[in-house]
Image (tube, rainbow, N blue to C red):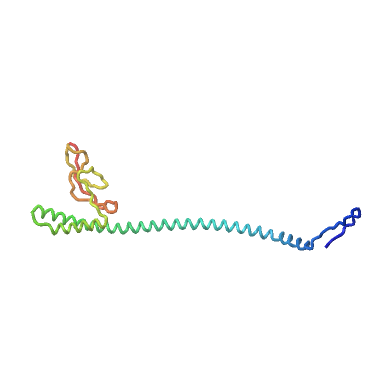
Length: 190
């Protein structure tokens, strides 16, 4: 729609352009104004959901860490339980092993053929090695209460104090733990 101006001083005809869409512009402005509270509300909800999502993500991380710790602890407990049973069996087995060693020594002193016992002892040594059971070497070492148990003391001015002079019973370690200490005799200076 075109409106003509009433100004008569000019040769030009003044024209004032009015948009046909004025009503539409007003209605879209009104719609825009009426949507603003909804947009603000949706923005607020989005921020709350982002915060909630972040909190849930943190909780998930904590639960995952707890699960991993529990899994490691369970695995360790299982390994310790199995090793404990192996160690119990090993202690019983070592008594029999000691008997075979003593029998071999008696046969050797009596000059009796002990080849059969040697084969059995080799098999027993292989079995101990298979289950990570190792003998504690003590002879000539300095006494260590973590590995040795002193049951006698001899006086020897030529040796340092607490030097192990004799092994009376072999000790053993299983999985880095002493399952049976070595029974030893130690020296004291004069």
